[in-house]
Image (tube, rainbow, N blue to C red; front, top):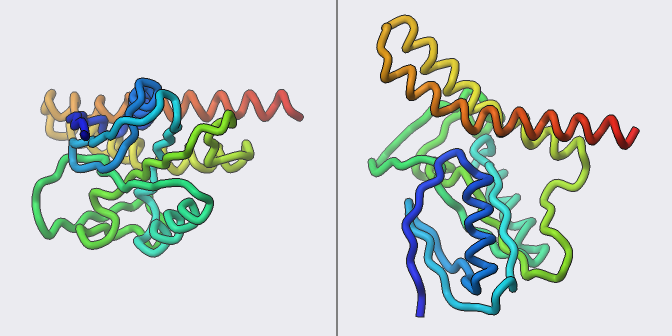
Length: 194
């Protein structure tokens, strides 16, 4: 019997990852995802580990290759949305993305900006980025859309003098600060290992 939960985390990737791992610790394994839906089946408590990764900067081809790479390593992988958009035929320009991923549509990577990676718990942590340089590059990539959203909406709020748009801009600050703190932690760790 499956259990369904409805949650929306947006850009709070770490919070989503912690929640998925708490569900796994309770004996629930992810079997499918939707816009706000997470569907689980029962399993042994702590049998699985989860990581959530931002891939919104990748082209459709690169995202599919990365997913295939992870699946070839024995992981289960789910695509997940980072926003709530219920329209059809959406086209978005992403200036922070790599060359092939700057135009995002519903047939490419739009509403598929996150990967949820599942690994059976073998006592070793699930690490998708193993070197400090790789981790640093990942968090810099993840920081770009948050910085863009903050600056775009912040500038709009100041120019138009609309307070509620300023609140929208401030929403981007939470994941932006989170990325920046993680980058600072990695930089400190890199200095200690030198």
